[in-house]
Structure formats: C-alpha cells, structure tokens
Length: 333
Ligand SMILES: NC(=O)C1=CN([C@@H]2O[C@H](COP(=O)(O)OP(=O)(O)OC[C@H]3O[C@@H](n4cnc5c(N)ncnc54)[C@H](O)[C@@H]3O)[C@@H](O)[C@H]2O)C=CC1
Ligand SMILES: Nc1nc(=O)c2c([nH]1)NC[C@@H]1CN(c3ccc(C(=O)N[C@@H](CCC(=O)O)C(=O)O)cc3)C=[N+]21
Image (cartoon, rainbow, N blue to C red; front, side, top):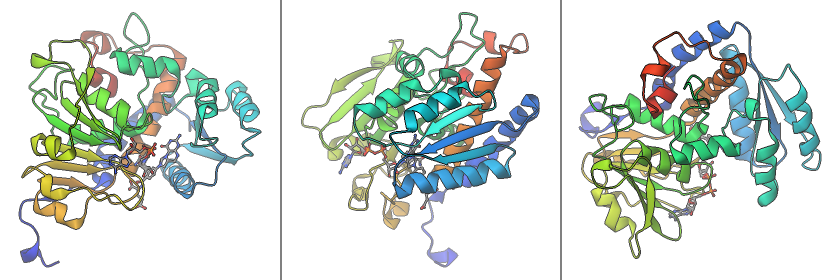
C-alpha cells in the first residue's frame, strides 16, 4: 500500500520491536549468570504449532547465548524423562510442550517438573501466587515468583505501549482501563485476565460459552481480583467499552468483529492465526499482529530468574525490598 493510502491513525507495533527492548535486559542477566544456561524442551506430540514454537525457541536461544536441547520422546516415556532432567545438574530449565494426553494427565505432568526448573511457571505454587497476587517466594521479598510466559509477554507489550501508566503506584498502573480478552484457557487467557485485573484493570474475559468480569472492584479497593459472571453479555456489550482488546482464538474460522471496536482501541493478537482482519487498522490506534518473539524473551528471562533464585538472593540493598509487592517489582530486573 502506498504511504498516502495507509490508514492515518494506526501504528502497527511488531513483537520484534518490543523484544529488542527486553533483550538488553536478558543479556545483562546472562552476563551476571556467567554461563550459557541450558533449557531442555520435551516434545511428545505431533502438533505442528508446538514443533514450530520449539524450533523457533531453539534458534533464538542459540543466537542469544543460551543452550536449547529439544528432546523428542514417546509420551509414555515422558514422565521418566522429566524426572531424569530434574536430577541432572546440567539442566537449568525444562519446558514441556502441551497438549500431550489432552486430559488431566497433562496437569499431572506439569506438577512433576522441579519447581526450580519450571520456566513456564506452571507449578502449583507459582500458579497460586499469581492468582492470589503474591509476588515473592520469600518473606524478605528477595526471590520473585515465576509468571507464565505468554501472559507476561502481553503485560510487557502493554508496558512498552505505555498502557501501564507509571504516574500511578506499582500494582495499580492499569487503573482506568477496560480490557477485553477473548480466550479463557488455563495457559493464557485466564491467567492473563487475572494479572491485568490484579494490576487495576477492569477485564472482560470472553470464551466460547460466556463472559466474565475480573476486577478489584470500584476504586480498586480490593487487594486482588474477583470474578463475576456477566450473564447474557456478548462481545457487543463489552468491546465498545474496551480501550484494549486482546484476542487468542485458535483456528482460522474466528474473525474478530472489528466493527464493534472503539475508535483508537489498542488491539493485540496472540493466536497463531490472524484473529483480526486487515480492516482493524481502520479503527485501532495500535495493532500488534503477533507476540511470539516477546514470549521467547520472557522465557529466557524466567530461566535467568530461576538460576538467580537457585543461587540465593544477591539483590543489591534497597531495590527489591523498597518496592511493594507488585507486578512491576516482579517483572523488573
Ligand atoms: N504467541 C504465543 O506465545 C502463544 C500463542 N498461543 C496460541 O494461542 C491460541 C490459543 O491457545 P490456547 O489458549 O492454548 O487454546 P485453547 O484451545 O486451550 O483455548 C482457546 C480459548 O478460546 C476460546 N474460544 C474459542 N472459540 C471462541 C470463539 N468463537 N469466541 C470466543 N472465544 C472462543 C475458548 O473458549 C478457550 O477459552 C492458539 O492459536 C495457540 O497456538 C498459545 C500459547 C502461546
Ligand atoms: N508448554 C507449552 N507452552 C507454549 O507456549 C506452547 C505449548 N506448550 N504448546 C504449543 C503452543 C503453541 N505456541 C505458540 C507460540 C507462538 C506462536 C506464534 O504466534 N508465533 C508467531 C507467529 C508465527 C506465524 O506467523 O506463523 C508470532 O507470534 O510471531 C504460536 C503458537 C506455544 N505453545
């Protein structure tokens, strides 16, 4: 499209741009750690999206000073393989690509990864901390808890876009924003809605069946979010209220109804498919078409955090302790 025909108002922000701003922080962490951390990936399914993501993670890791060992294993052998990697001192982090069995056995496998090697933050303790808005692992608030990579990548993008308002205190920086999240899976959509609401946003969480409101209440008086069903609500009810819309519907059938968007909304797609058609640029102020590169940066950041947590706190006096238990305290280096 010639520049003169381009929609005037919309800025397309690519994940690579946001990833660049995070990678200097990752490189700094890497220098402190003083070795190439080893991430082991277990692929036990034939999902092309998982394979693509795994190959891409390997390429990015090798380019940026990390080692990545992708192990293709039979699903019946995976349990023993994970336990062996838990025991292996050379292994710093473990990522298991899901779905494998596609049922509760997958939850079982998530819980057998050593919590000190769980780069995706899927262990019960990390998940509990996230939903309860508990940001540190220790009383002294020196060891940060681990957040799931894709939801945290979206938080990092919203910080980059200045949707997080630094004039407000840590932990309240999304106060005043209405955000629609289309996807409520346990791996991305539900944790994302909780994180955004814990930071002060009023979140509409949409799945195939219904819409829920995640909120800290009027004046964000509550310490952590609560959830209310919005009976009978549809996208038509929440999208026009939302200044940020985040969509992650799998498959190529779903197309987000862009005519419902508020003028100047910020739109982010995290699905492998393009949930927003090209016409999104006629309405949005900012459009982020994909986020994968940021997710991988956050994965590397989590791996460094695990190594730092394992080595024990060596936080310079007066940094982590000064900050209240906030997501920023958790997400800042
Ligand atoms: N970019 C990244 O870093 C990542 C991207 N993904 C991608 O995100 C997408 C979603 O992955 P998962 O959450 O694991 O999928 P999932 O299948 O577990 O969940 C899909 C969610 O979308 C909802 N949904 C489906 N159709 C809908 C509709 N028509 N209207 C409203 N809601 C609808 C479902 O109710 C469910 O909450 C996939 O394309 C996946 O490849 C997943 C993980 C990381
Ligand atoms: N334990 C676990 N964690 C995962 O995070 C996980 C998983 N298992 N199993 C498989 C799915 C799939 N997945 C994707 C990551 C990035 C893109 C993605 O969107 N990548 C490109 C788009 C690529 C393209 O345009 O084709 C991007 O964001 O720029 C898609 C899918 C993570 N997964």
